[in-house]
Length: 113
Length: 112
Image 1 (spheres, rainbow over the protein chains, first blue to last red):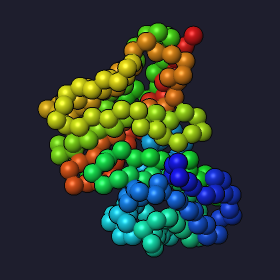
Image 2 (tube, rainbow over the protein chains, first blue to last red; image 1 turned 60 degrees about the vertical axis):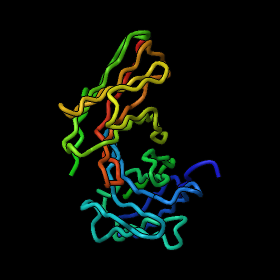
Image 3 (cartoon, helix red, strand yellow; image 1 turned 180 degrees about the horizontal axis):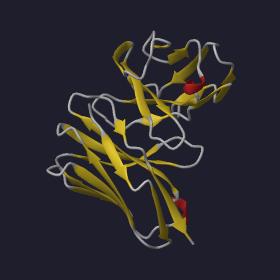
Image 4 (tube, chains in turn red, green; image 1 turned 120 degrees about the vertical axis):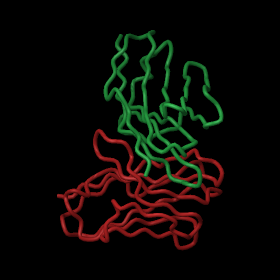
């Protein structure tokens, strides 16, 4: 386990379809974060977990978005009824408690057509 | 909540010269300030960070300074090289707030 893994790397979907992304953090990291990044912008916080508990959700995260981390290991981010405005890079990051430095995954690039 | 402003949005410097990127933050309780570098098509990577109990930190050609009174912090890159070309993001995080808030980024071009 050498880093944060995200799957898939790219996803093209039609508007209205549901999509699900997966993130596998570094194994000893108990914190996991989801961010969204659009072209020319910095990563925007969406939500984060400590173990299996979802501790915070951004107001950016509409009801169409849901994230889970059922066993405190990998996490999934689901977007229901996708819209063109959902097109972005979805980044996952993980960290140890008391260590603020994130390790990011390579991201999942979502294109809604 | 925290808001991080970053400038300039684009910066071009001659190879060998220095580059400075400046950021301000809004939440006086913020105490951790990382900088990330993102090359085209790649993930953001932490290059240096500073906590509020120090005013400056250096790592080879990179240094970060923090002025808590003014709520601003800066990244300094000396003797710039072509591989320094990338987008740089500043960020801030507060006490008891485990998420990091990012600035909008600075695209740094190193000119030959």
